[in-house]
Length: 263
Image (cartoon, rainbow, N blue to C red; front, top):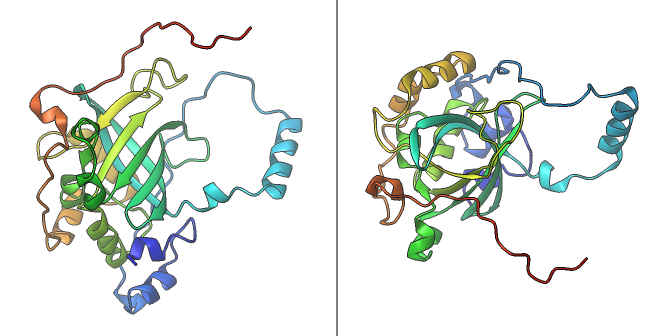
């Protein structure tokens, strides 16, 4: 059982528990604190009424939300639109570890309570990725560079535990769809979902975007890169990162007839 799976019973990591989980004294763990991001742009609609607040509070207290409670990992990183590397977006992933080989993540625009839900990502092990059909592999990207470069971080997780998390993620592959093109319209989810990809080399990501994230979170991708230098760089399985060929799969909107129409 991996460290990620061991920790998947709670939404947030606890430093004392992590120290026990990896068999190291708490004093060896560094401090990592994720700061709340900038206020979100409002979405259409009137402010919540007192009635809505009461109903929401009651529902929160009375209803079970097992799928949400199962989310245990929070990862901050970046995606670009598969067909346009110039469109780059910060992504806050909240993930559930369903099996040793499979994660599912919801992606938000920030880590604030009013964050916008902008996409989803499925993450699989190399073992599972190798079993996928060639056409399916074209939709997936590797995580080797995201981990090794320090671009991907696990806010609030102590340094030693984060290192173990990244060891698990470096050989994985992700399929990401953004349902809200947040870089074009921060107020409303216009348009259709878009396939996203991950960076694979230095010089691809907008450095201002990366440095802005580091400043807000109080982290350093350069320091993270050094901390992960001992993590072996995996060989990327053929078929991933299809954008590197200059051609990529992407959704288009098409009008089609309705089948089995009932009126």
